[in-house]
Length: 254
Image 1 (cartoon, rainbow, N blue to C red):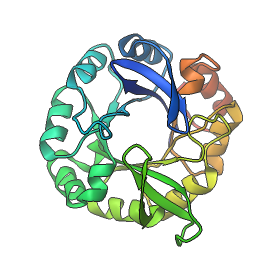
Image 2 (image 1 turned 90 degrees about the vertical axis):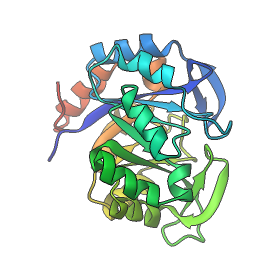
Image 3 (image 1 turned 120 degrees about the vertical axis):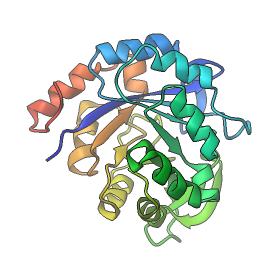
Image 4 (image 1 turned 30 degrees about the vertical axis):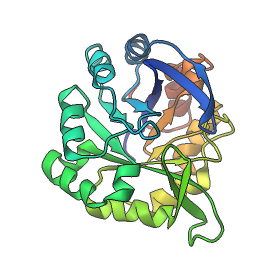
């Protein structure tokens, strides 16, 4: 079994880290540079930074946020939000991101995933797959875009499989039903994606207890565990999660 990684997530709006429930009701969670520095010192394996309003506001990710955060960390940084072209990817990587995460733009133009994987390498291309339950879909999960506001009438698990075929190196599924609720990762959704692809899958949305992280690996099949609220509001430290997982037989970088 490969090493499981812990990835705190900085959801960004107006230059601040924010955190909501089901993608709304946002609370301030501090300065991104201070957060990033702190998480690296705490032993985070990777960091995610998502410009949550970029697509809705029809603009690019703010590159100065990326530069400021990348300047204070040496762990891999995945940046998402408003990335819609090869130029956006190029500039985001040049600003210090290790990987980019695409969502709406990939759905709109799947060839972007293929071109990006060829030019920059699959390991630098993450596709975020947001979904909500819909029994009309073969897997029971419907793909949604634009920060979770627009259902697109497509099966989310089938889309994840297609993204892998196009060259995506990581799949980051988030269930709209679980985001920020601290009720646990949507294990059925995470597992459905993990069973459909061979690339690493990130469990995202809803971690609230130490057991949720364990379940994300054992039941969800995730290799990377993303969380925001529990880290931002100091419910747990990254170290607490790693020690708990290690104690239950999961391989982590201590």
